[in-house]
Image (cartoon, rainbow, N blue to C red; front, top):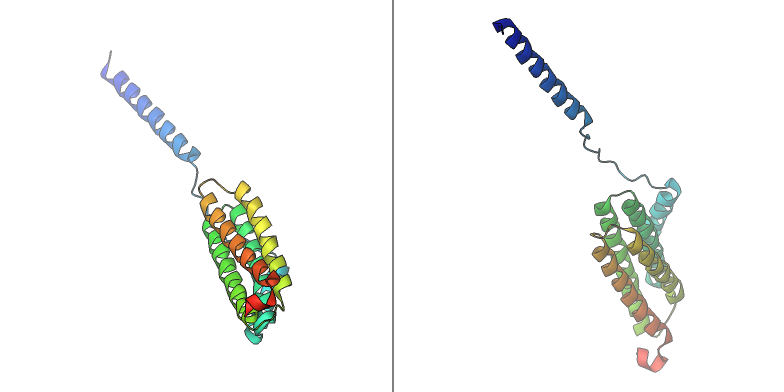
Length: 174
């Protein structure tokens, strides 16, 4: 063999390896861009309106507004989980829990005064969230399930306390 033909073979192998490397790089998936979950503008406006109302309200009316806010935050959390943005979903679940806690604290103060105003509407909101969380737990990735199950238990406890306050005899409330 001549010296020239080995150079040709070496160059051929080099071109072949370069082509394979370029092909592999072209097939490798690009990192997915981080996108925000697009929320329904109607729900966002409704949430903003509820937030403004909650700032002006007190007592059972504020509790009802906070419970409605928690419902919308759950809807936002569900959208986050469905868009594979579990961190966003978890943040929204935390907000929903905080607002539900605030609503129940306001109603507990009302109960201490012997009143049960607003409890029915807050209980309905907590019930909707609880049922939605049970469905969500079946749909999320198994690594995200513990966070959702924690929320399920938290909302069940809140609802149980609320039902106790609603149906306890008046002499036990004081």
